[in-house]
Image (cartoon, rainbow over all chains, first blue to last red; front, top):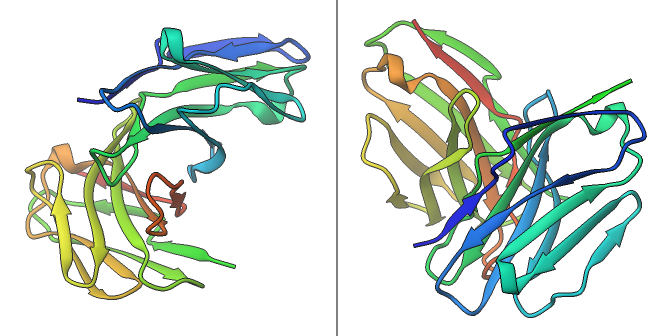
Length: 114
Length: 113
């Protein structure tokens, strides 16, 4: 069975601080994909990134970076120099060959204070 | 470009009343379609998914049903709502590429009173 764990329920930081959101996953497949989504107060989920299990290179996109470590089954998300607009709930998700849909973690609520 | 529309945005319904939430996708054909529910302060739970017209898979036994009468239309229904049906319902679509990302609608916040 697949599972995604986001142990951090809520994180509060002050603007310009760096923050890392943790994601740990479980799957029996050797081929799988990992995702991050952002859910702003409006409610719509916004897709941020997809990584496959064969690509362990870290990825950076502006202030966002992702660290994928297969050895620890983790796919962590770091926001550098956080801004108030980063305040949202962030979801990590997993897709493998066993299911047609994404399995989501419970989400981490990030509050960035001015 | 593809867009997904979901309505209504907010709904307050009494216990025992019926429910119909609608979702449509534009700009693509034969998408995979999904209904998720997000209970307050919790993650997303997959309710139904559909790979084609009339093809519905249910993930969790519950008081809800789904239908796909047209290629890009997905409907979530209930004959009699329960208090426990309250939550935030999200429709999503993806193409048929395996393990691809899903794109979400803006959601419907349902409160059963």
